[in-house]
Image (cartoon, rainbow over all chains, first blue to last red; front, side):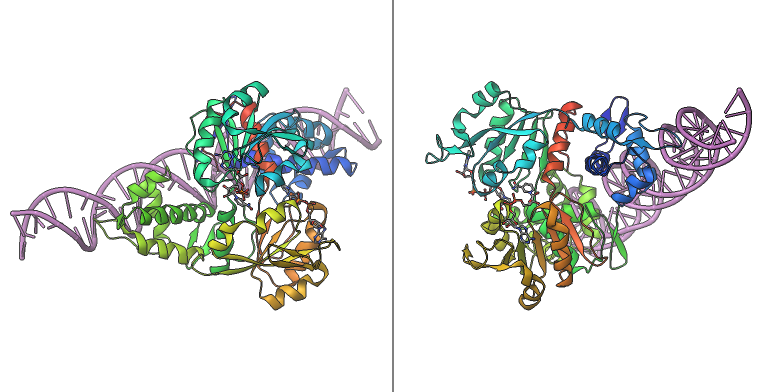
Amino acid sequence: MCPIPVGIKRVAESTIHRLSHYWRVLIALEKEGYKTVSSRELAQREKLTPAQVRKDLSFFGSFGTRGLGYPVTQLKEQVSAILGTNQTWRVALVGVGNMGSALVGYKEFSRQGFNIIKLFDNDQRKIGSFHKGLIISDVRNLEVEIKQAGIEIAIIAVPSAVAQQVMDEIAKGGVKAILNFASVKLKVPGDVCIRNEHMSMELEHLSFALVNKITGKQCE
Amino acid sequence: MCPIPVGIKRVAESTIHRLSHYWRVLIALEKEGYKTVSSRELAQREKLTPAQVRKDLSFFGSFGTRGLGYPVTQLKEQVSAILGTNQTWRVALVGVGNMGSALVGYKEFSRQGFNIIKLFDNDQRKIGSFHKGLIISDVRNLEVEIKQAGIEIAIIAVPSAVAQQVMDEIAKGGVKAILNFASVKLKVPGDVCIRNEHMSMELEHLSFALVNKITGKQCE
DNA sequence: ACTTGTTTGTGAACGATTTCACATGGGCAC
DNA sequence: GTGCCCATGTGAAATCGTTCACAAACAAGT
Ligand SMILES: NC(=O)c1ccc[n+]([C@@H]2O[C@H](COP(=O)([O-])OP(=O)(O)OC[C@H]3O[C@@H](n4cnc5c(N)ncnc54)[C@H](O)[C@@H]3O)[C@@H](O)[C@H]2O)c1
Ligand SMILES: NC(=O)c1ccc[n+]([C@@H]2O[C@H](COP(=O)([O-])OP(=O)(O)OC[C@H]3O[C@@H](n4cnc5c(N)ncnc54)[C@H](O)[C@@H]3O)[C@@H](O)[C@H]2O)c1
């Protein structure tokens, strides 16, 4: 649907997604002591074709050595730089309910550089209290506080009914990247990138598969 | 990557995904009192093209009336039947930690027919205790108990390091549909459908977008 | 019953993504 | 330094998914 311009070339959504996979594999390979890796090896680990791996990487440069493969550590760092995971990001979470709480407590995010540093809610009983070392702020101050804190990414974990209004405030605060857990399609300004985590739809996909007796296929 | 055979025709992954969206829109339209809806109207609500809507639906049959559009209630039920959301599913959840707890408490799933009826964990302090009215079983009995309970869908919410072994047990228990929250690629038997909820990867996509100043695009 | 207006259903065109296939070029042995 | 080997990088081909465009079909009005 949308090829993304990076430099001159256009990169497919799916390429970016696979980049995340490559990054994980490269981290594993590095731990296992590999110095170099071929596109074949890399492909095997993710059940892809070597050609796919090479083409994906070639969008961003020439990282390999002909006859040898790719230098693991170096490629890992380059992929990391492409994904932006070689830096830390300031993240705000709105809606400290069931889902929100689980996310705040999740160590893996900060380990990858996604630091949740602001929490917001509209529940008076929650506002002002501490949650995993972070104070919960009043959502009414959202715009001002995310600007002050220099928030770059926002996570929406409020009930679906109020997700759009929260979204609007976040956009006003100048945040350009949003992860949405509410099961509604949100309207976003043109310069904001939103990703949806629609769990119900994943379950629906599974029930579809069961009803239609789809066999196999790690489908993503 | 994988066009899915349904009857004779092959249906794209993305079509199934959009079907979920249509279903939600149809429910909304029904509430708003619409009796019929055109592909144009349906498309507008999801920012798609009318042709896309018609083609998607045409994979499964002829549901509309030329000159009139689609009967809302009827189409809603037909889409629901295609997705398998017109029935209830027996779901088991493995790993009642932060994420698992949030999922068990989520009412929307059961409202859509996904009934979490079994919980498993390996923590002795949790086993035998009740959580939202459900007793937590020992994961060692997983294979037997999911067979007995006739579980059709399993949710994996255990630490990534043990996800594969849990996966293997689930497969032994005969479950053919799995929703995985662990951030690893799991090996699955050929007849099992697995969907991954990889939140870290979604965050990585966002950081990619920020680094590359991608503008706009509700990208899914 | 006929005409008009509207919207579906679908083959064909188009565009995007994946796979193929091979020329290219660096490493390594001698 | 020369030559062989091997895996990359990349156009070209194939496949897959989306959009176009129009014939067919139905409703409604006369
Ligand atoms: N819990 C799950 O497992 C789950 C699964 C899939 C999707 N979701 C989605 O995630 C979102 C959150 O779900 P949840 O189960 O955590 O709900 P929840 O009710 O437990 O939490 C919602 C939180 O948002 C806060 N809130 C409400 N209105 C607000 C506002 N205007 N501004 C700021 N905060 C506000 C509430 O006080 C509460 O703390 C929902 O949109 C839900 O559809 C949840
Ligand atoms: N918490 C989040 O926000 C979050 C976000 C993204 C992904 N995830 C993923 O979800 C999974 C669970 O995360 P979490 O934060 O809930 O972790 P957690 O540690 O809170 O919960 C894990 C649960 O699994 C149980 N468990 C461990 N080994 C088990 C086994 N062999 N069999 C059965 N149960 C076992 C533990 O006792 C615990 O109750 C992880 O794979 C994590 O990567 C979590």
